[in-house]
Length: 191
Image (cartoon, rainbow, N blue to C red; front, top):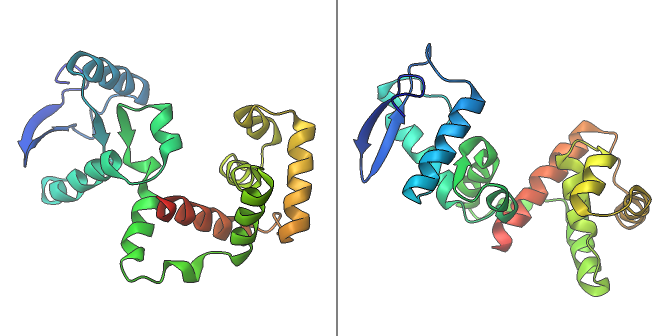
């Protein structure tokens, strides 16, 4: 890592932490390439925190990287890159996990999603997954259909069915945000 942007490696707790100077930080592609090479050579998993701001916050960044490696959900993200995990991909799950400690996480979930989940179970459909991906990919029909390996017309049918069952107004950003958070909470706590 020293050759990749002048990084400094230090031992912290039982792990190796690599710190970059924020002025000499490598571009994302170079960093990703270097991390993949190290992960392959050492056959290890790598957790990447948010951008490091100073030594006084070392423990915070360590906890972020550790969470990226140990997050009890997001199997989909782990399938994409099983050896390198970025905290940015798990930050919302982390917030939900911390919130769940007071046992009130169900208060923020959208009740209609439980109806949709039951419908999926009873009818062997994937409407909940379809809605989640549709929201994650910012309502892009092309990308969502491609990710689900279905035709765009099938996606349109599924979205119409979701609307019939739940009545969501997906043009409203606040509704989309709440649905996304609720779906992430359901994903996390189902594990």
